[in-house]
Image (cartoon, rainbow, N blue to C red; front, side, top):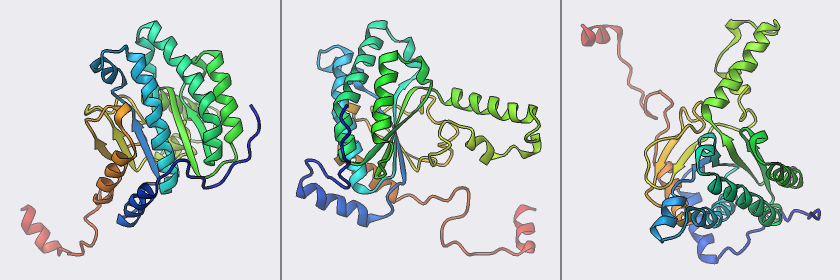
Amino acid sequence: MKNLEPLTLTNIDQTEEDKALQEKVISAGSIPNHIAIIMDGNGRWAEDKGNIRLFGHKAGVESVRDVTESCAQLGVKHLTLYAFSTENWNRPSAEINGLMKLLVNSLQNEAERLHKNNIKLVSIGQIDRLPDTCQSKLQEVIDLTKDNDRLELCLALSYSGRWDIIEAVKKVSKEVQNGNISPEDIDDELISAHLSTADIPDPDLIIRTSGEYRISNFLLWQLAYSELYITHTFWPDFRRDELYEAIFSYQKRDRRYGKVKNGYTKRLSQAVINKIIS
């Protein structure tokens, strides 16, 4: 693969109308620093059209491209896509083989575009379970884009939230065993530092397509305070316009992290509190 010079802030194929719409999104409120997406519904989308499931996975690549580039244009710094879960290994072998070939082709075809858009590719998950050709191509694109800094695109491949936590616990346990830390040192920050996402901030916004109301073993630790957005749109039909709607929804939320509502200053005397709870 030729070593391309990144063209910082290139907006490939963006219309003036879309630029104006993005200005509205940006002016409406804060833009999520990290968006994570459970890309669901490829198979059902294809079946509804009388095609095999792999047809839907291929169509979903267009959504990945559009959403990734629109996130970069909006100023989102981190985008994590749930591309393949550990549970997906239980699917028919023909579908898995097709998915792996599609992954290789997509990485090959999108590498230049990612680089021109100054987008950095990283991955999390049990990457060693992927076929050698997938691992090789993935690493090739990671190496090509490693110095890009406009947006970090993280592909969760052969990923499981439970696996992530278990691996973190193993690492922490080994540090305790080696005497590097004591059990009393274990806290949220220490666990987070040993997850596969240690260098990535927790998601501000989780989007799930296809209308399913579950998180499917995705970033179980990291999404503790993430805002959720569920759409019935299947992933192959999910484009930037609906991404904007998800962000508009996010901007209307009051993220309190367990605290009282912003601006709440009322103070109760201990006597009043005692009266209320008595």
